[in-house]
Amino acid sequence: MHRVLISDPLSEDGIRPLLEAEDIETVMNPNLSHEQLLEEIGSAEALIVRSQTQVTREVIEHAPHLKIIGRAGVGVDNIDLDAATENGVIVVNAPDGNTISTAEHTMAMLMSLARNIPQAYHQLQQKRWERKKFVGVELKDKVLGIVGFGRIGREVAQRAKGHRMKVIAFDPFLNEEKAEKAGVTHGSLEEVLKQADFLTVHTPLIEKTKHLINEEAIAMMKTGARILNCARGGIVEENALYEAIQSGKIAGAALDVFEEEPATEHPLLSLSEVIATPHLGASTIEAQENVATDVSFDVLELLRGGTVKNPVNLPSVSSEMMERLSPYFKLSERLGAFLSKVVEGTLERVNVYYSGDLLEVDTMPLTRIAVKGILKRHIGERVNDVNAFKTASDKGITVNEQKSTQTKGFTNLITVEIETDQEKRSLAGTLLNGLGARIVQFDQYSIDVVPEGHLVVIRHTDQPGAIGRVGSLLAEHEINIATMQVGRTNEGGEAVMVLTVDKPVEGNCNDKLAQIADIKKVQCLTI
Ligand SMILES: NC(=O)C1=CN([C@@H]2O[C@H](COP(=O)(O)OP(=O)(O)OC[C@H]3O[C@@H](n4cnc5c(N)ncnc54)[C@H](O)[C@@H]3O)[C@@H](O)[C@H]2O)C=CC1
Ligand SMILES: O=C(O)CCC(=O)C(=O)O
Image (cartoon, rainbow, N blue to C red; front, side, top):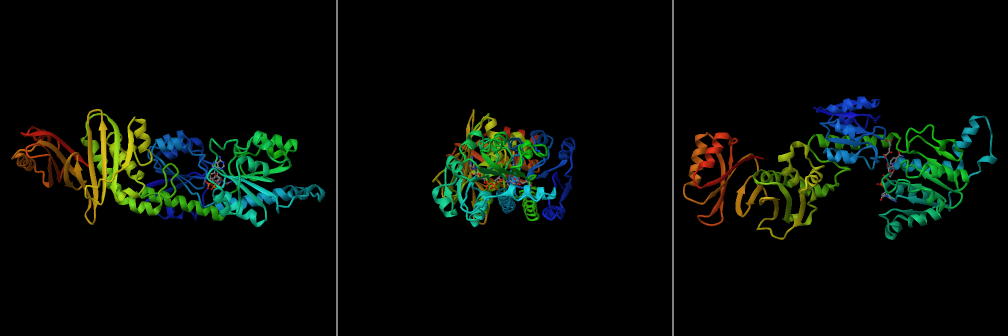
């Protein structure tokens, strides 16, 4: 039974896949204190949050069984991603489910700001019929400056164009051609700031965007311009905005988000030019159901050994690519596991070569899995797909991936090579059509071994009788040989035997094998 902890309010319809799963115990508790969260997380394999729960390093380090953190929404700034990655915890989000709701909320804020709707309503509630005080501005022909032209920024642009606004956008990934296709003008940040009558930000909150709209940026804007932030508190510097409104440089602001939330006492809320909502961008029935469903499916998939759709701390792989790569997952891990168990010395470098059909695909996920297979010998289950590269780099191991045209006659070939301070060893495997995975090369020896189960790897001198003596000794210990492969460089020279056996070769038997004449080294492994 997998335990899933949900520590923020989530749509019950959205998490139905979890609630109905027989192998999942779902604990919903949106009112946990920090101490309670530290306690509850101890037995959870998955944690699902919205934006309230702060998933800090402390929380992650209190969660020895945690495999996945699901963010039912877009922004992951409430999750310590480094700590998650270091601890091998995958973080997933729901990037698409609340796009429309947030874009619609931005438009609602834009129109309310232009027409002073919240302020006028507030006066009416006070029984004041004020008309002169609330003269607004039209949106038509005004310039909307968009900073961050991602999912939400684009949706906002479409809607603003419906109001016949002129849209100018800045995003590091936007160019003239893409802007033209979207029907907007492409500008630098400075151009956007200078031209905007309304400026709206739709970037994530990251180091580069923290206080992006600061005193200096605001100084470039038109006097009387208005600013909206429905993305993250901190993208617009709050003190600078306060001063700019006080001085009359900025005519008004619409804020859905604040640097510190909840923000009921914020000085900006005392200004009549500021309208605000308590982080409601994604708060619609539809968005909440969408994001909860999306993370629930990813959590279920991962806990059941599958792959996730929206990883944040792993590069995402398209489903088409995943289909091409997934048959090689086991082979990559087992090549790594096999080699790590026979190599001697301190690991320094891992090289993975791909050829044949694998020349055309992004093989990085396979390299990551091979590295995981190698490191598991020393680190155990703490290493996984998420932290394999980071763990290798922390341990000073260089990982290198290369494409090679040398197929050695196979339609696909993966060669894992390990360099230590003492030796360099390699193992190559392939997927044979209809027959599954095979190890086809071990160092310089050609072999044909199914990479699974209990294996005995024997280095010996190619002499008559060596194979027979090994077979007899194993029989004496009631160990049945399933397959045996022998490779040699030349007659009478260095040779290798790889046996698959029905039970592990241990202790006494292992010692006796090593004492057989012409046998140089015996290594027993299970993969
Ligand atoms: N108020 C609310 O309830 C919600 C807020 N959000 C927030 O909205 C923001 C945007 O969300 P999406 O559009 O879904 O994300 P997205 O990832 O689709 O788009 C973000 C865009 O920002 C751009 N960007 C990054 N750094 C930039 C910079 N320095 N200058 C200009 N552009 C930059 C990226 O290239 C990307 O195109 C996120 O911060 C998210 O947390 C999202 C949903 C709900
Ligand atoms: O309602 C929420 O959970 C906040 C949504 C949000 O800010 C996001 O998805 O980034």
